[in-house]
Amino acid sequence: MEYRKIEKLGVAPSLLGFGCMRFPIKEDGKIDEAEAERMIDHAISSGVTYIDTAYPYHSGDSEPFVGRVLKKYDRKSFYLATKLPIWNIETLEDAKRIFEEQMTRLDVDYVDFYLLHALDKGRWDKILDLGILDYCEELKKQGKIKYLGFSFHDDYPVFEEILTYRDWDFCQIQLNYIDTDVQAGIKGYELAASRNIPLVIMEPIKGGSLATLPEDIASIFKKYDESKSLSSWALRWIASLPNVKVVLSGMSTYQHVEDNLATFNHFKPLTTEESDIVNKVAETIKSRTKNGCTGCAYCMPCPFGVDIPKNFRLWNDYAMYGNEEAARKRYHAMDEKQRADQCKQCGACEKMCPQAIKIKEDLKRVAAEMPK
Image (tube, rainbow, N blue to C red):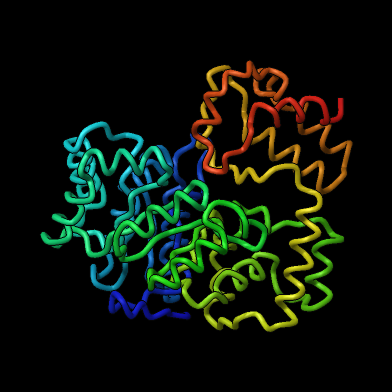
């Protein structure tokens, strides 16, 4: 396993981090705990030491499940990351209550990497107004959290405001070879590097979108190296950046774990020629996609039942693949209430979107452009 030294913190976590937000699920929607535990065990036995969860993942089931699985391991053998859900907090007492609840759920005495979750301008202002930073500093003094950071979903100017406010121990941003100009982007990466703030990366495979590509695009990679998965190209691209210390992957199958381990157990940064290939693929994909929805579902639930991420996924797939028959079948297989043409243009979704997508306008386009 590749490990990256974080000189600032004096630790060296595994470059591959296990994101605990996309575990396999059973028919009832609950975590398939036996299979998920098998995946975590395989990752840890292969050298993964960074385990990332959060309060809302799997409808609140991720933290307690992860806590139970990790109980069999020496507490000092792994780094545990979780996050404070700012949208659930209206008072400082809320923050204190939720943190204590997280400690109980995880059944630990301390959290290694603690993040203020999914910050945007509104949530950042709330943090300052409520004095949450002072509370987190007190938690550090008490040894209940080791390192304080934040994860981010807003535009670059907001990122700059937050990042430069204090000397953060680390921060977590969304970055992949498609979204270099989205949210913090490469510009944010460079700002963090200049301030010696180590980065944890989320969405390196863009919610799985970069793991399956149209054949004509995938062939660009395959012609160079038939043996490498599409995911490995995305992971190697982001991990080739030196200030990236952990790359999170929300693995949902045992095969995902094995493929990611193959990439990081013998990690090799991209060569100049390989970087050129990735750039060519990125340009081709960008020329086809309709919008940058990652399927994070922060926009859900829609008050009127529209399945916003699914509509956008089908729309983007249709634009990329051009398979009219498949697109028609998948779109009309949805419950009628979930389809884009049922949008009432209320705008509630747009306030929650980390990508700042113009959801109302795009849903109109979905309804007009999907095959009838």
